[in-house]
Length: 461
Image (cartoon, rainbow, N blue to C red; front, side, top):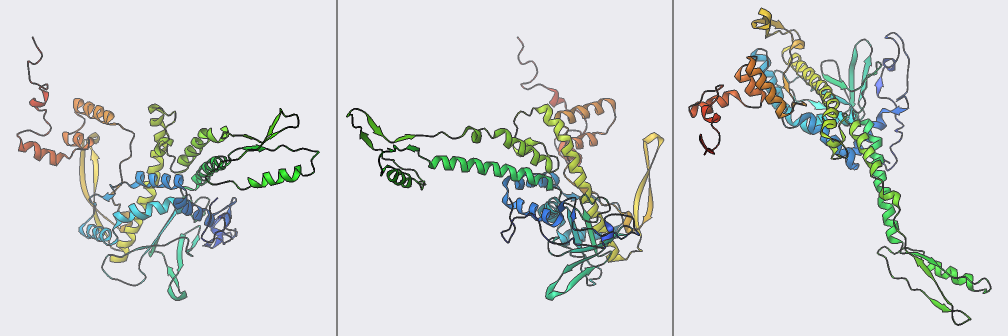
């Protein structure tokens, strides 16, 4: 069970949908069909708050999201050389530095996209002239409202400001990205929402198990008290003995037993204590726990269970095949983040230089059956400039696969030494300089490398 700041269970927010023009969700552009905030029995605000709460309070869910963020962004996020003129290149460099986009992506945007399923970046409302804008990222749980319609998409974003003022951003002043905005729904849903239930069930199962062992550890035994139906005070004696052990000692204790000699002088009557053993069901919860781990991993980018440290019976073969859906899911999120950043940069170009400014880019025409590339200059507007954002490379290829591919390309003359070296994570330019410093030629096999360790003639009679 997840609880909100007010201590109440996060089951139903009671708030209304924060999308204006409710004809957006269902129907045609000219129809005005209002709908409530709940879609198919799910409340968007509640789900968002549940994912946020679970990120901090549920160790399995939080770890799964952190692993997904590391897989998505790692430490390699940057951008390559922009294929555009100096104005566009300078604007990108200024925009990156002013907003520290590398840190912003790794510390905030990727995590918030997984937990909220929405990103809303806004530009300054005042005119700051020809300088890089410092963008802000709105908290979608703080009264943000969007206005949208089927024909134009999101057309306005509003949020509460200081002194009870409302801040309003018009087209060109904001960039909004939503995950799984289906069936003409303008709003998004948390990427990790499906991992909530299994992660919560996993923690609940562990809590039940701990509770069972805690209670059983405090029960020192079961006392059997002798009751003589003929003795009027026997039941009072029973009640007194039962009361003595009604409160379970936290750290345990020693019980005192009474032995009474029967009237025949031979039979001994005594209280009896049978010590209990922990329930087998609580100790055999491994299969259930693994199932919840698998479902949690699948709910976050389709991760394989061994990504969360649960190997179980997974072999290398099945692990490799299980990785492909996770890779595709990662690439899908990469595409959404790349689109968000591209639209931010294009909006910055329009704000800084105007919507009608044209930029020069270089395109290539392939000729001679793909063997020749001819470059030419092309004039485009900001909307046609694509930034080569560099995300971590996610691939199933092992080092052995890469080496085999490089060797095949070298034998058949399909690739240059520079390309082959780069495919194995070497820097061709740096390696060329280093090899030249010791009298070697880049791309040429070294005679010394072909000599077996220990020199020629070693090991012969």
